[in-house]
Length: 383
Length: 156
Ligand SMILES: [Zn+2]
Image (cartoon, rainbow over all chains, first blue to last red; front, side):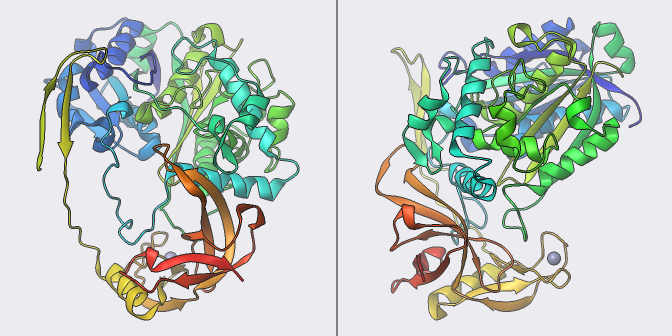
């Protein structure tokens, strides 16, 4: 990288089932305004904006970049819209990082927003779906969970997914922005109605209207703006395609590779020892275990043990999703940025009630599409 | 785009813009998809293509390999039977409508194929399904060139 970059401000909306009080641009603006206030800068101090949102059918409005740009103070400045499925919000941050490290821009605002409560029913047809080559996300996640459990049974059982939900919902009780803040016990998860076996209702995420925003600055500006910026230490992204040969859903290659790239960049050799925590994209309970393994925090099949022994609890030796994760707040394209936002806040020591003490290095992960997009971002308290 | 919309006011929902869409479309399927459909409909054959570099047999067929970025032009017939890779018993659709009978979605590695084939299972109860079991296509009499030309896969 040509020069260093850091997160110097963060903002998010409350993530709610349905926000009838704001339009899509107003929702995006709410997060952006909080991020600018958090950084203590004004919209005119921003050199460029990167905006991420889901498919148009999800917003319910066409070409959101046209409507949202002015709401973010863009006129007269460059704006770029990015969309890579579930990783959209993380991709917006990553594009902002490229903007800054390239030397082209000093201060960049990354915003991600989705309003799925207003989505167009049914969505639009996918390519290759014409002949029927399509799986909905829930079916995909269910088959992934089945394959994962069957491969590692009895070390991994259905109960381990339930333990993840109980842990993350418990963490969310301390996060005022989370969508679902009522704790549940693992036995409640096990007793919830089956949705797509082995997934039960409480193994699946809610769906929220919500937005997130980050202010990203170069070294010189970052030091001026923030007393303790969250420096980008490593970044890895990897994509594959749907229906690729040898694709292993229980140990997805794009995730493994994205992590390897990020570790190499951040000079990390023993992730579990050198990092303090991770925010993973736990769209479904079992995925937290799968990502914990694919990111190299334990061996394949040991994910169940990690949650069962409390290692990944907020007060454990390696907390996973102290914010409550996607299982507690799922605002579409903003969800992946939330993982980065939470990891950055932990490094800045400003995560509030769910702050883990003494965090120096934290990681954020996301996945999207038919498991084919993966991003990994590592933040450090030191440049 | 055909449709209608307008401002609707009031109630606890606040002011909203409501409307309805009807979106007819016609997409080019591409030449490979065309042959795939025709073979399914007319000959009850599942045709894939082999990558000229990694030699994986790809489904749905397309003129390139997504891994190698190399042409995939050699047509290969794939068996209509294979091994169950993974499955899920789905209780309802994502909009919460509950099915009368759970629908068993599955990924199948057809003999001769290099990628998983998504379909449904039939003539079997969810509890009797297991990974690695052999399954075979049951073809429909009424075929239109899509995956629904196969009614389901049954255990053999
Ligand atoms: Zn190939």
